[in-house]
Length: 296
Length: 238
Image: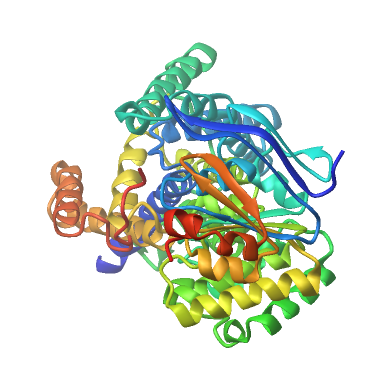
């Protein structure tokens, strides 16, 4: 029972990590908490669903949904964020306007999805079974789809890890996020690099949406709860740290799984927020965050 | 058209405050010009406007006849104009090697990037032994060396140096200025050096300009400027 609960926790934690990673990527590139991330993820999932409807092949729809997620992320930055940030440059509004605007964008994207696909629940099926693995006569709740979720999330996290640590693009991304002005003076095209950060975030969110949706149903709001967990995970991890996002997601996923198993479903989210508050009270910069002075 | 850096009737405003007023200057290729002035004289503003970080309200600026206004700093780097900002000029969270790599990231000629990196490390050998360390573990002088080394990897033609002596011990300042002078003579770099430390800057400069409250009040060779006792007392501080 303990192992079952742990495995389920790792599976949902992996998804939280992906959503947290998406939030961290945007935060690092633009210093904005992107509340539209769940809308972007659900939009790319609908695109995957539509492709799957026509091709009857989940494996074709998955990479295209990820690609669509990257494009949507890039467009949100190009058409929306840049304009907004260049217009709200100083004063108290400069800090808060982009965040509020992402909430507006979330509503916009979800209404758009409602108009195009309707507000009913859809099925985006994966060819992998949602039924748990069987060991002799014992059926565990961990299914092939859960295993795929863990593998896909680990692959995405590993790819991002390699890009950030070992490539020129990764170096430019890190430089632009730590010290945009110095990066600029060194020749890094900061706004282009930021846009790539948004595209990466969109892709990470798209993976989360496209691999988790086959385990339940698809609707304009179906990823909202995932976003909340991803957000808590990102904040626990320090909002600035990729490793923090992964650890935050796993801790939360495994924690939720054990609470669900041994205490009950009614308190899981309550515990999530309690953990969030405790972390913020004791270590406001998050577990993996560094103490930094706010930018003027 | 004049070769080198030519600035004509240049003004920069912050709201109602004119930080630079109708400034004109010309730096010929290969020349090292020091702009001397106290805090608030507009030195940093001048450099920031020339490197594209802020926009001037009036005037023109060109490098070898091509206007440099309206271009972002990252584009000017590709044109051979590199600005080393005051104080925080390296990225503390990155290692020394990564900071150096940033200077050559945009360049296609990776072989020359490798050569330029070796040359930079030969000029500042202390960096070679610190490649894997984070830049925030370096001393102030070493950070300044790292910033200059990174700039060299971009193969610049014009260096815009903003107060390289800021916060450094006298012995280190001497080392840094010696290195700057060496860059001018060895690589034929054109240097516009903005400094509060008049004595050190004028020691290595071909020419000095004195800036006060955003206006250029005196131009001359270091010897001429140092010979003027009134000027020394009022603006040079010694």
